[in-house]
Image (cartoon, rainbow, N blue to C red; front, side, top):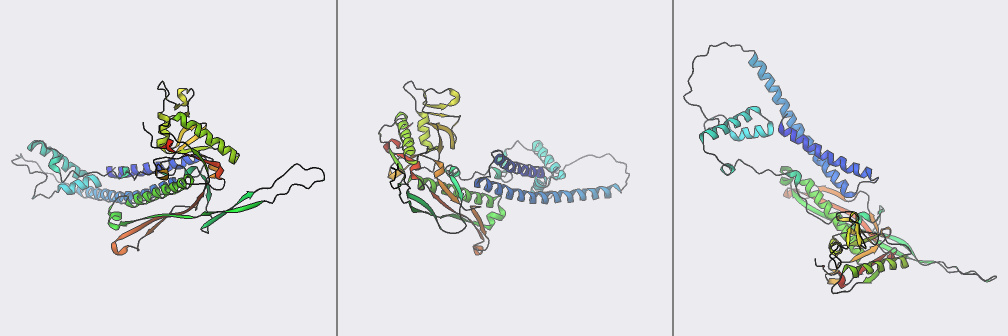
Length: 439
């Protein structure tokens, strides 16, 4: 089989396997695929579609070549000629590739590599043997125009982004189809009961509420791409669209984290210390836990922090240089934090006071204009995120920039978020004790 065709089929199989792996993982975890996974599947499907088209083109070329070869064989086979060979003496053997010859190295290189032409390969092999015999050894520098760079498009490195570690763990809802404001009724005065003396009036307190309004935000980004890049490049549209989608999800997470950290209604725990230690931070976390239980009458179920703060905790040692936070497999004794193994971004795999730690690089490291990074303790059930079904939406405008031969790609979506339904479900730890840590 044509090696180029084989490689195309291998690439298609690899991308199909990635799609299957994503869907199977979601099925095993008994969940729907995330927006990021859906975007990746869509991008892979588009690449498979392009590969199918290319495979069809090359297969058609191979079919035509095979038919031509069969016809030539039949024609040559019909000729029967008998001739007695006479002695021959070779006086001069022409080079395979020469200025006045009929063979072209460039044409044969293309035919051998792309079309799998056996005759072209044979001529190139003969040429290489001629070079070894008639000329001194050479390196790739002698063929600067012929040794072309190979671009590994399958390994193109997208721009690294913080992603949406917190947004993927918030309590998610489908955004209503209409409206730019969501309203939730919050009871501010509850009913009351009291011990009744016989014959006395029963306690009566009128319930009262207020309205919590949540703004629906539009998150969007665009990119103008030249038609030359799209039509003459490899996977440019998929790469650009995937980058826009990644930027969308990171911005959404950044907004959600910012809204939570900047919420002035949540409980505040001060941690001020010029030379903070993990031993001094630990009681502050437990203080946040008890304050949440006192105000919310339920317990927190997560701790959110910047990756550098968890690293600060994991790097801490006691007076005998033993780590204070270790994987459970190490048999921790009096450990501040424990984990299942290596530290993972997002759902870190570590817990403090039994609460899972979520690391998110979207957490601020410049709180109130300082170098503080905020630690948030809270309950994810009260971190509400409303996203429109099918977001982010992807648009491609062929005509808007047609005069410049450009295509406009747009990604946008609608989202609303709040931690104000029960702000008492959250506590924020900040102060000079959370300034940039040293290691």
